[in-house]
Length: 103
Picture 1 (cartoon, helix red, strand yellow):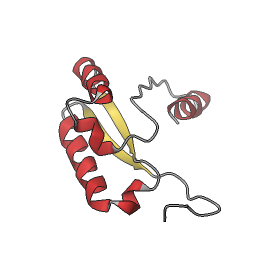
Picture 2: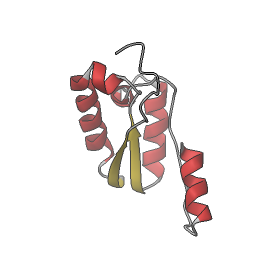
Picture 3: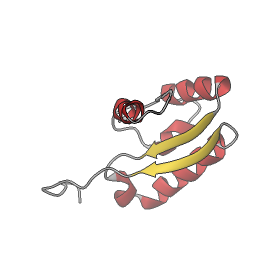
Picture 4: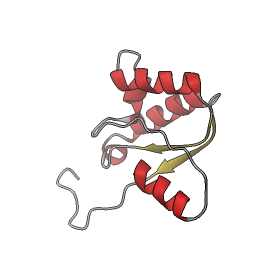
């Protein structure tokens, strides 16, 4: 997704720098766990830079399966990043054409 976003911006005349800290299957609340390696990457990134926009994308079915943890993760991440980010956008993945085996 980060590369697609960057490509769309550049093709439409916008000068952007895109950074990403992602890991397949990771939950948003895991990015505030100080023992997590991706949290450490995120911390290093926000120590060095300020960002106009931060896209938050949850694991595709987690927000339905455990909405309380999803909301908690979003809230905690926004609190953590608010001094380094101007605006937050929640990015929702598309629905699965054939449904989901876990729902």
